[in-house]
Length: 438
Image 1 (spheres, one colour):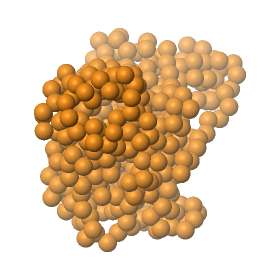
Image 2 (cartoon, helix red, strand yellow):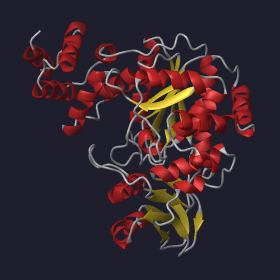
Image 3 (cartoon, rainbow, N blue to C red):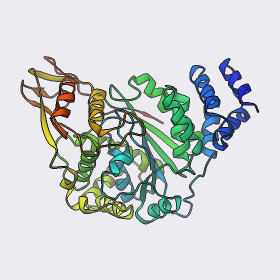
Image 4 (cartoon, rainbow, N blue to C red):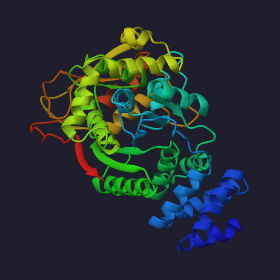
């Protein structure tokens, strides 16, 4: 099939057949389609959105463009979680060891941060020596040994997705739901899963800021997962403020280790609450729990016994990371950083937090990427002291900036301060879990 014929058909708003979509993905994979032809079809798909059937076809084609992992020799239910991303969203680092301690096998293929949202791989690499670039053989062996592994997408898994995503990012065509679904689900379905739970964020710090868009994305991914034989559910969760106490790669790992060690302090609990709800869905769908109460009891037990924390330690060791941080989490906090307090200018209540602005401010000082090729300063970040609904007096500390120098303070402290709206009225309490899509 000629690329220009397929491009013309979608440009004119017609539906593409399964053969045409598979021909496109084959052309991406074997490089018989030029970048300008791929980009032209992606733009046509953006302007004339794929329908549900086309969405299913392109997900399947991208999945079949590479290898699907085989864990048939692992006699445990295989489960994973995926988040659409947010500020301070470090739940993967909590979920994987707890789920493994509860009896699941968790082959977690993760990504890097881009823009105001953080990436699991970047967080893990803030642990000295931690290797996220595993071969398929290494990845499978670590899952068999400790119950979970966390690595980046290999060249063999959904290779078409890598090329298509890079071109979508460069041509402002990321935000079309069918291609988001295909990108996420082709990688997740390649993990050889029995169960997948999706954390779809909504709010002012999320990619899908509006609830209706989050619902549409969640339903599309759930339908696609189930149609491919993987039990799939989604929770729509709140992202109207940073999740947990810290923002920034190394600081977020510090927070997770503290929680796994049973040293959860004020500000960290909401991160643990979201993680718990996601693990509950994994345990219920996999058949390892018959009720929410039973699932929560299992989670509580593996945390209290230290079994979940030992899974984390074992994984760090197997992926060549320094286990010193497990014994002394303070090693993750750079003592040479400048700590600058962000103070409230008014009395009242924290009525709104512009979450994306906080994430973007940390990116500006090196804590994240503005472009895919940017390097990251894993140590800089932000400590959230006050959350939505908290009472505040003028001069109270809203949060603490961890940065390298006064120049960074001058460049973003005002932006952080202006991210908080203080008013006389206390806002209604937000529900962390907004909806279950099953």
